[in-house]
Length: 187
Image 1 (spheres, rainbow, N blue to C red):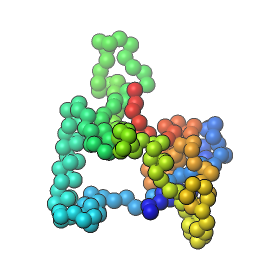
Image 2 (cartoon, rainbow, N blue to C red):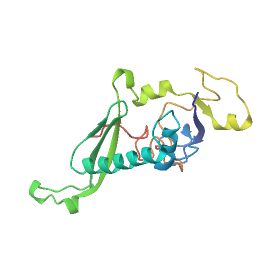
Image 3 (cartoon, one colour):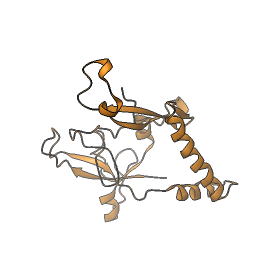
Image 4 (cartoon, rainbow, N blue to C red):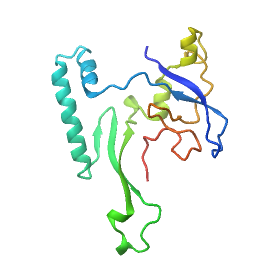
């Protein structure tokens, strides 16, 4: 069974209310590029060669961006919905007629909202229930002892949000980021 590797790290942000507390953080082993993902998909009993899968993934990527830039949401059944949100500068326009896109908009973000239909629910809380966690420190020590609901190692640091790491994880609570790693709908 696949396992989520994590490590427990201390919040080092002295401006955070969570300063000095310990939190679980995903330990990513690898980032798959499109070519590696295509190879992986083709190895799962697919009749399509890696090049064909790669072509479909590349077309998906370009069409996804095209549809998002046309103010459309893209829902992939069983996975979730991609959509865009705007980030405004802190000080907005004083009057509606003074609003200027070049002056008042800071960024255009691509967001993802996981599927929440009952059978395919991969929302954050349901995804958490499906995962098995392994503490990387315990794994490196060779300790395979079970702890808690089928999880290997110490899972006591989970539940308060994701931490930032070099692998692009979420943020520590109180770091000025979004606890929980983002991914939900924004207003």
